Length: 68
Image (tube, rainbow, N blue to C red; front, side, top):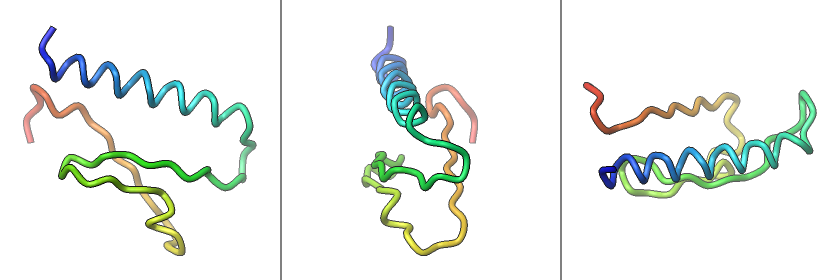
């Protein structure tokens, strides 16, 4: 398996584990817990970096083998 595919699978597993652990304690309307992710630019972004903004959109897509 190519390294990019392994990395993608690891990221998916970690995101799913974190989401399932966090969602068990959250109800609709609760504030999201702070979390941190690495962007495609190599920088790390935390949810708290965007505090005070009215809306935030997270977009995630597999980089390998996709156009654009």
